[in-house]
Image 1 (cartoon, rainbow, N blue to C red):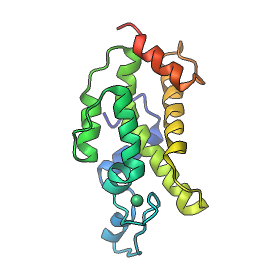
Image 2: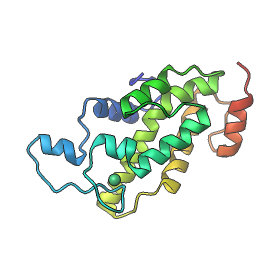
Image 3: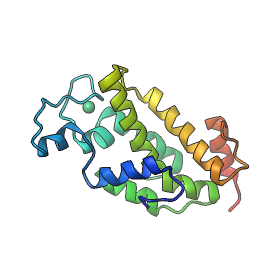
Image 4: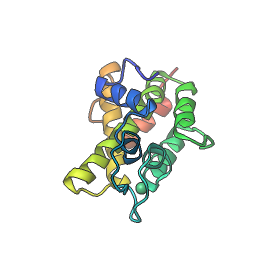
Length: 169
Ligand SMILES: [Zn+2]
């Protein structure tokens, strides 16, 4: 699932590092003896930056998952990032578009959050789900286009959702 061949290498590699706790969030750096005061980039009142916080239960993380869970009809039951991603991977899509999306979207979500986090840290661009969600949608459509050429790479997200909903099995 992590090495889903449809995902770009950089996304799969990031996901692999994330699941091995090797992503350089502040909390992980602390484990390697690099102690910096942790201030997450995702909240106004800065909290400690852990993987669970940044990618799952911060406002940014939470809004992303809430949005995409709803689009794909995934229950928001799972209590942590790993369980939620596994739930996505185990959910059966009703057609070829959904099947691919369910496999690759968790990786794209965490990848885009990480990119936005680094942009916030190093280029001072504030993280905002209004920017992150469209980027996730765009990357998803581009990757799906590579597998299913009838889906145009610049398809509008609303249209994409309709196409996915009504595509045959
Ligand atoms: Zn935060």
